Every structure is written in structure tokens, then in C-alpha cells.
View 1: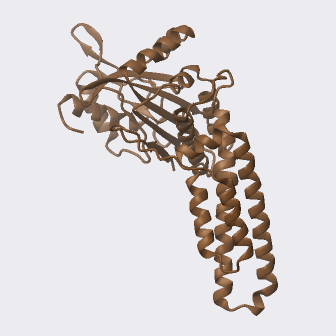
View 2: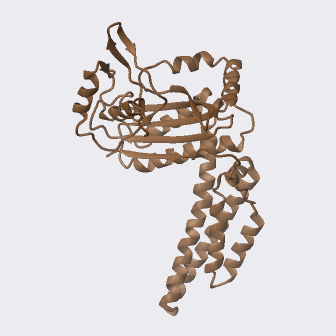
Length: 366
């Protein structure tokens, strides 16, 4: 079976709703001290859990990401909690025969909650700081804004999910990153690409008719009567033979090495999504063009003047878990009108964005 994961961010309506969370290591250590001293510490553990989990919020995480000292303090706190857990486990083992069943249950639940808090500190925060840092290109030495950290935090979260979904080796995987920028920010982005001699590369990667690894799609659009530009980056990998983790290792490398993506992350966006898919091919060959996502590029159509490029209404990327039973019928209907699907694409999923495109061009509200 396939796996699907992603993060969808709502279009911002104005002022940011991001709340700053104060990182107070001393307060966290004080709560741990009280937990160590008190036998009935349920409320204290709940308070610690809430405080630690709040550190995963975007604003707090960006502060942690930027401050090595805070990272070290949180690591030390996690080690301290591990010691506290060991003491409580030892106490429970030694005193279980002298405690009421209710007390045993309470202590056991507290231990499990403390383990969850420790996991949050060491894995969900500590390990992910390292993973996210490795997604940034080493060639960019400028300090990363909280907005850029949030982008790569989202990418990392989706990559982590793909790793968990790949319980056995999958033959392919893909990820799509969509950004919507206000036109003035997009022009600044283009100016920066020009200074870095990357505009020609952007044009080359935007020319293809088939969505493959490192494809870039650019499209104008209007939001609330304001003009914006959408830009989507696609990364794909396909291999009949591989090991668990190979796909995401490759995709992480593509993100890290893409200077154009690294540049767009420097600019404020009004909308950003991450969509990813791990595939166990059931329909279509194991190839990059058949990796999901697939898009609404309609290819060409046969007219009285020869082959003409079909227009598209914008950027539509689609991933699918499952098969489309009436795919051949829909494909025949599409091609009967003179439209041609690239012979490189044999996955049935391609028909979905083509149908959406058709409905949009007919004026339907999708």
C-alpha cells in the first residue's frame, strides 16, 4: 500500500496569529525538582508536559533552533528527567508489594508521562533541530529567520512521517512544496536569483511538460483581488530495489542542495504547503514521471494547426492512495477530444488533476 502525508497552512488574513512562548529553563527545572520531592505529582507532571510541548510551537522552536545554549540546557533537562524516571521505576519495583493497586497505577501512569516528556525534549525537539539544520544548505551562512525555520520544520515533519509510513521498502516517493508570494516579494526573489546567476536554471526547471525530480512550476494568481505568484518545487525518486530510508535520504539531499528553494525560503510567503507520498506501484511503471505528485499539465492537443500546448488554470498537484477503476474509460474520453497524455506517464492518478483542470475551465467552483 501507499502512504500519504502533508501539511496545509491557511492563507493568512492579516496580522500574524503566532504567539510567542517564553522559554524559561529555570522554571522547567523547578517543576522537575518538585516532581522529584513529592510522591503525588500528577498536577506537576501535567504542568511540565504542557510547558515542554509548547516548545514545539513555531515561535518557540525557532528560538531554540537559533540558540545552542538553550539546546544544551534542554538536553541536560532531558537527562535529568531520565534519572528521575529511573529512580521512580526502582522505587516501584521495590515497593510494589507494599502499595495499594491505585498507588501502583498512579505511579505507573506518572512514569509513562515522564517518559513522553523526555521523548519530546530529546527526540521531537533535540533530534529535529539537528535534522532541520541538515536541510539548510551549508552555502547559506546568513542567520535563518523564524519564517525559514518554520518552512524547513514543516518539510522535516513530513519527511519524518514518510519514514514512519515506509514500513517496508517502497519503490518511489515524492514531495511537493508550494509557496504563494505577493508580487513584490516574488520580484525581490527573482532579483536575488539574478544576482546569484540562478534565473536561467529556474527557467530550465520550469520548462518540462512532465513533473519529475527538481521540477519547478510558476503561476500567477489572485487572492482577495491582489496579484500573487505561486511557485511549486517537486522532488521525486524511483527505484525498484532499495533499502528503508533511501527515499527520504535522497529527498532530504535534494532539498538541501536546491539553491532556488533555499532562496525562496528567505522571503515572506502568504501560504505554504507540503505534500508527500510514498508509493508501492500498482498502476504504472516505477519511474519518476509516475511518482506522486502528478500535476494538471495537460500536455498537447491535436488541432488543425498541428500540436498545440494546452493551457492550464494554475498549479494542481495530486497524490493518491489506491487505484482508479474507471481510469481507462476516463483516459479514452480525455484523448478522444484530441488531448495527449505524455507517454512517460502511465499512472492512473494523472487523470485526477486533468479532470479538476477540466472542471475549472468549465467555470465550476472546485
